[in-house]
Length: 527
Image 1: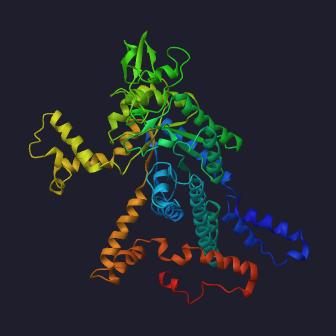
Image 2: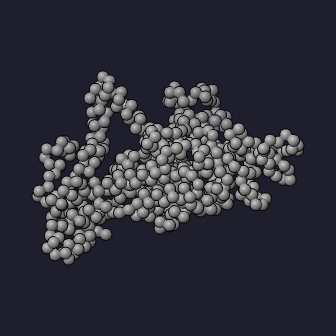
């Protein structure tokens, strides 16, 4: 609805109450309504789910329409990211937020920093979703508040209509969040209950993985243990029921498979007949044929092709998969997930190699042609070394002389100015575009970039401020850059909501309002 329409509606509502509401200003009501577009997390989930569905359809039509996100561990970080995107690109289209379970564990647990092993409080995940959207909604309120001030100044001038059009066409900072529910934090019922909390907080997309919940590991660490397909399907269904119960019919489920790096399973799958999912899962187990029962000691035996087989079991009571079956298991995981209610896939890999990803996606698309991925552009990868080695290998295979390069030492700064390094950087620069086109990647994300940027920027400031530069370390390295690069946060009082509060004070108390934004506010130095 337009500003003027809302203003007229507010006028009618106030007039209908007679003199009792004489102190209520229709303009203030209109502005508050525009500044609070989303009343609940479910409003946000329904709105953002539709955006994701539209973006998925656009990608199916043209893979150049891939989407992106960065992981954020605090509402302020997410807010500043979206403010920056709007400033630099003029639109938030195709840009999301990612909520990383890794960062929740490392930064948001009451236990203190934890590894990514589902040991943190499960309630901290929906709490962060709610926090992120609280800050994004505040970004809307702040930006609109500035437009309202401009509108007041432009009354009766040629700019009035232009500013009112900007208000009417304001694009919200609220964007989809893909939220990590880990392995569900328990059984399917626990998954369902947590999924509801996450959706109620605003999440339109839930990412769930096929690891054992109580053995969960970071996707880029060793010791990962997967569950049989039927167990994972039950959790996918639990997420879908949560979406449908809450009326978010467009909700998105991202099914993540860790099978490429997981060589273990906690249980042997139940099988009713040859060739069913349980049988296929068990078919990847590393087994020895049993011809003599005398040497058995509490072992579990299965039948395979008419032979009695003993799956290899570790002292941890976990069973091993055959070496080299990871890609085959990933393909089966992905097909099975899409056939049982998942919308998007996530294949966790050990390196950013487009052809490795594409080799699996090609096989998946033979069964499900529109299969598409969410892909982790992970900080756990050494991108520089990986891509320099990929270029080295490609040059060597093409017969190009690579004698000037030591493949194992390509990370060294001595190679930074070489042709090989330049080509590697070009491949990194176009990785997302190329992988979207070749490997079916609809959404590119970096799981924990703001963990690293916070550490890097703090290190830079600490080195300068506590060193010879002193206060100049902050002024030159932070504030001067904020001013010259147009970082809105340089006016931190405004960013924290001081001006919004002044607007409310004026609406509530009129001329008696004690406002903070007067002539003596030092923030005016940055106006």
